[in-house]
Length: 479
Ligand SMILES: [Zn+2]
Image (cartoon, rainbow, N blue to C red; front, side):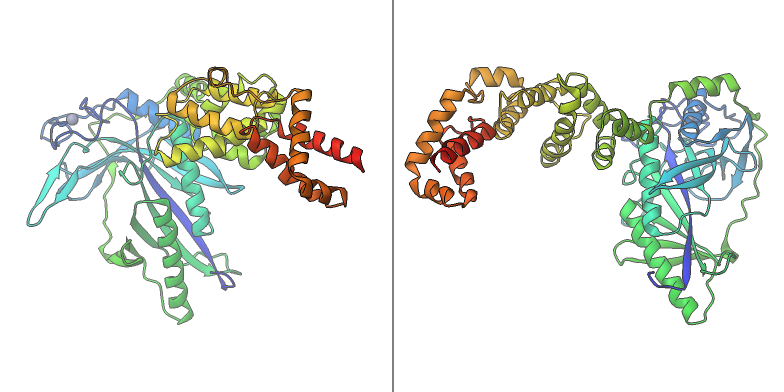
């Protein structure tokens, strides 16, 4: 959409599953992976005569999420019935919130821009249809599971920004331990509205809604496709139909699902079985205090207090467990000021590289943060070289030993003794007269291969900067 005369306006509606012990309106366990229809009761299967009761844990988790998203919590909110018929919704209505949601007026910072969150409300999930060759089965285990819906203002201006917003949203909800937000497993789902309007006009164009995207990349691709499709229609002088479209991942396109005429009239009304939800200010404040430090303020602290670059700080804070690993290791550094950059680069490159190749994450990592700090301490003090550190790291990883122990057992400590280094350098010069000659005629680049010779002779154990210095000293003395 570069050089287009249209601008894009996107709004996102995200559903996230709350992590709780029980479902929203009954005491059935809220978890996945069980045999179909084993986590159900008369309430969540909508039997006549049953009464829903809002579970405290779900409400507290929803408040927690809303606070992490900078929202204002409404003291009173109301559960309403959203009427529609669907086989996985046994009551023929879904309990949701409409006019008075749990929370409003929050924001997320994505790509340096504050994007407003209009509202966060609570609702129950539906069951799941399982399609087989000639039949469709229904699993009600998920029916009644607690969800929050997070509705952004139509302030997102590109598919890339939409994806950035979602990543930030996911990061905040995971940090706050309110949801796993796994798009592939359906614990985070996203619907998007997109419209185009002329750049000079302030009136929004006709929007279409896109559904069925199950990854950040899919959201970006679907919205890019939809923006191009609308632009082509508008350039041909055609109208955009207000409709819901499904993203077809395999064919990389969106396809019409239902038009505005077919859109549901949900006939919302307050659920007479549920009293208004009242959240006391003291409860809100307690939850606010219990929120962990969120990524944005962590990144700021890492950059300010610790002097880490922005990029490294962001990578360290990607996951909560990763940031905890880093902070734990940081506390064990001998020279925090000098060691912190080395530590962050060890975590962001060596460690994460290793974890990637072995398919691990910070939740199941076997390496102790203290050992990594110890390794950095050994490098900083000159006891081992960077090259040796890599070998030691390999052993630490495989044998779960601490670096000090490895260094002692294998006699790996760095050769830094002045006499020893001098002897090694003199030998390097003797055995490589050609290189030494070239250096003396001004080709100082030959110092590299000479250092390499010493390093090879000592299997990487010589202190390379000392070797470099000593070689120059000896050779310069011959000039
Ligand atoms: Zn139940």
